Amino acid sequence: MELKEKVAYIKGLMEGMEFDATTKEGKLLAAVVDALEEMAETVTNIDDDLDTLYDEVDAMSEDLEDVENFVFDEDFDDEDDEDYGDEFEDGLYEITCPQCGEVVCVDEEMLESDDLACPNCGTKFEIDFSDDDDPCEGCSGCDPDDGDNEEE
Image 1 (cartoon, rainbow, N blue to C red):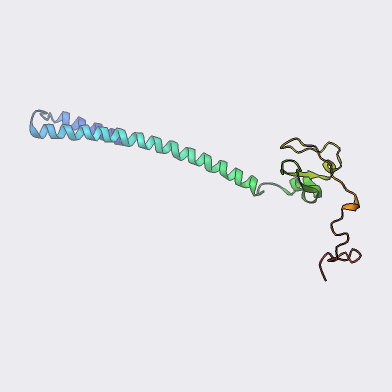
Image 2 (image 1 turned 90 degrees about the vertical axis):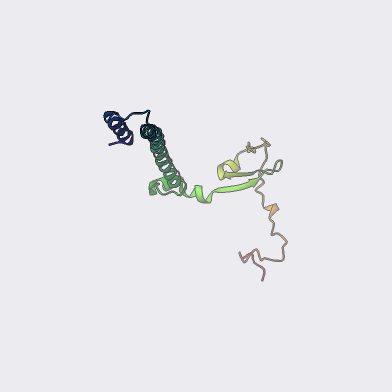
């Protein structure tokens, strides 16, 4: 039996016993039953709201689990990793835009393109692949024939 039904039963008992609402005891019992009715209505509303909140929290928990699985790669099969190949891991380069300083990630194909532009400010720039700009050229800290770039 629900709370509201129990209060209605008590109210019916009181009316069936023909309590006189003009006496002290009758007034007291009528006030108690009225308070019980209000409390039962409030508790029922709180229960309904709580059920709604539980449903929403469960839905958010499932959505969060989906996001966590996506972010942490738990649901991806090995097949999906093959789609990216080595280019995804090894073929990306970071270039800092000379105009705005934005760091741009590009692959080898984009590096060779003549219309390389910063997505932030739109400044077009070129990448010079010539060997003349070798930072170690003339450096006394490494031996270019050795292949080891540490100081000896």
